[in-house]
Length: 105
Image (cartoon, rainbow, N blue to C red):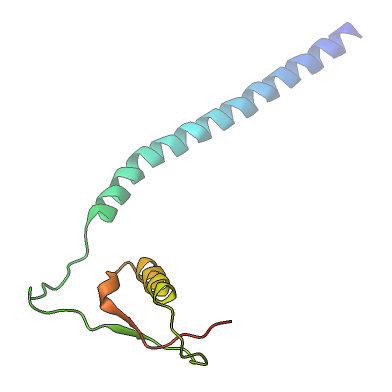
């Protein structure tokens, strides 16, 4: 009886060791792949796309934001907030936008 338990324990420990060895080997393989791949992706992401050089005097055309206008009493603060929100979303300067009209809800 003791021999069967000893044999089962030995097989269990061998299986445990083999399983842990495989997991550790795979983690080491993944770490090696990451050490190789991460610098390559950093070099690719550091490249900036080539932008056409614009003349200093050339200004971008203002983008028109239009909605249905039901009220004619435009509040300056609301217009400024709308322009600032759109400019922040677009990542552009607020001076490049012009609000044509807006609708109050």
